[in-house]
Length: 110
Image (cartoon, rainbow, N blue to C red; front, side, top):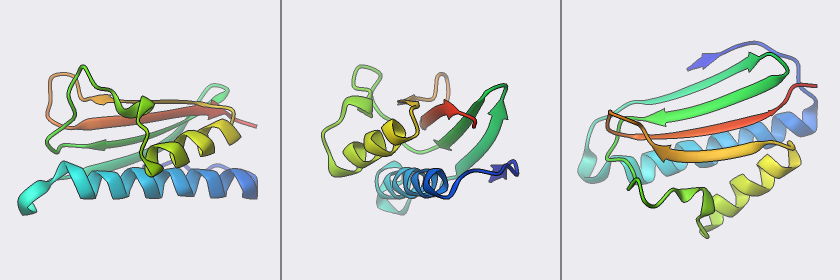
């Protein structure tokens, strides 16, 4: 984990926590089949007026032609809902050039 220390309001902290939980759960559930070893990195940082949350794994990855930010599963709907509450953006895609998947959430720092 690479987590910067920032003050956030309680309701925003809950949304961030739910997003991290869902992303981590998805990585552990799908990225490492058949007891495959791997690493999951969680980063939270401020970039100017924006907070950036990144969850990255080095698992089997997702297909380039099928980004899951438009997925219809319960986890994806929950993540999109929490991102909307944060008035942010959400992107999930394969890690370019490396195995794995990267989830990036950006939202205004207030």
